[in-house]
Amino acid sequence: MHHQYLFAARDTGAGEPQQLVILARALGHAYFRHGGRRAHGVHIAFTDVEFADFFFSFSIA
Image 1 (cartoon, rainbow, N blue to C red):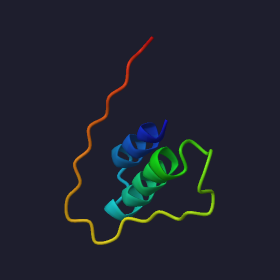
Image 2 (cartoon, helix red, strand yellow; image 1 turned 180 degrees about the vertical axis):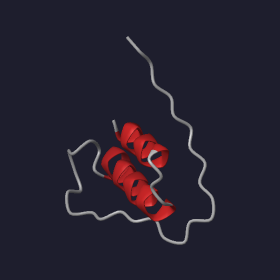
Image 3 (cartoon, helix red, strand yellow; image 1 turned 90 degrees about the vertical axis):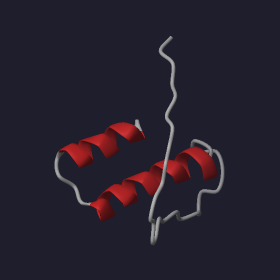
Image 4 (cartoon, rainbow, N blue to C red; image 1 turned 120 degrees about the horizontal axis):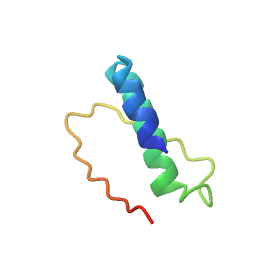
């Protein structure tokens, strides 16, 4: 779901700062909050990012 927001933002001309906010929220939700089951008060932010490389993998059932 978060990837859709990120790609939509990119495709509509969102700047890098806005895309980083979306990415930080997605990573926070997926990794630190574990899909909403923990760490509810954690705030995630990307600052001074020079390079990030991600691999997305999903399967369609």
